[in-house]
Amino acid sequence: MHAMVLNTLRSPLEWTRLPDRLPGPGQIRVKVTACGVCRTDLHVVDGELPDPLVPIIPGHEIVGRIDALGPGVEGLTMGERVGIPWLGHTCGVCPYCRMNRENLCDRPVFTGYTRDGGFATAAIADVRFAFSLGEAGSDVSLAPLLCAGLIGWRSLAIAGDGKKLGLYGFGAAGHIVAQVARWQGRSVFGFTRPGDVATQAFARSLGAAWAGGSDEPPPEQLDAAIIFATVGDLVPLALKAVRKGGRVVCAGIHMSDIPRFPYALLWEERELLSVANLTRQDGIDFLRLVPAMNIVTHTTPYPLEKANEALADLRAGRFDGAAVLVP
Image 1 (cartoon, rainbow, N blue to C red):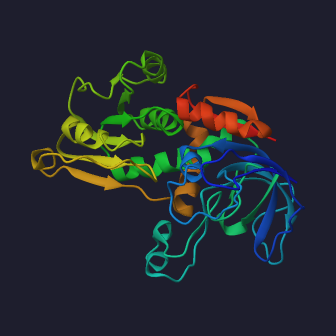
Image 2 (cartoon, one colour):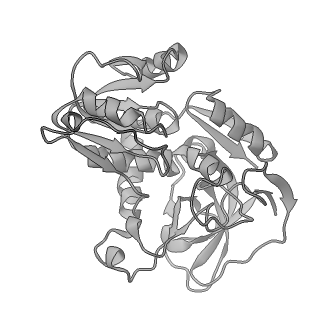
Image 3 (cartoon, rainbow, N blue to C red):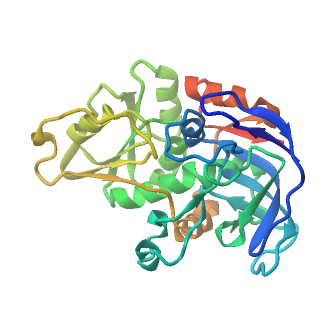
């Protein structure tokens, strides 16, 4: 197998030839056909997440075909197309797992962070944390759904049922969530970097009722806002934009420090919440509805060996939607 390996934090990934790996008990091996490039991959490479496994193969939006089964595998078959997400394993016995909140597990394993991921020609995964994808849709179009889509779905649920929804940051997750929210009958208000008229036009093309810079107030008060951008300065702005009793959801795994802000922005029962990871039930619920929602993912494919270029383009915001590596 070949992989793009992070050998040292804050360094370029290195094209590496590795021995083929065999799945252990309860595991599958997947021949990777596409792997999305996520903002979290940048956090891993930049050393912004605690206790990473290094060297590590990043990547956690994996689509591929099962080409080997470990002992005791049930529910999936050879040749089946599957998706492998960020949450790769949970202990099953900690208080959070026993409360059906496995996304908060005390001893989790994360794909592409504490277990090798999908910037490779093959990946090993726990069969319990792999989703059957069926045959509809291309591998490249499905890859962003495995994190940007799933975290967006969980963020929408936490944001509540409000009809006027603000999205701060209109990248991979934002462009998927906008389509889901419109399918749910909500009005979407897109917030981008100030002056980024191209991304604002992209948001409007996906049905946003309004799009503008993050420094601009929306034309009407919002019921809820989701912050996908990793910028803590956006939190006070989002709180200011939501109505009394409104919710602001921080959807990233990492964010710069939130600045001091007056209590008046939080008063009147506004809520500030965060999203952590996903549960398997999130994946089951979301992926079951994907065909009905007619989500169109906007993707920019890169050859696997161009992973560093894809990460650089993501950092610089050089494309709309999501980057996807194709071995």
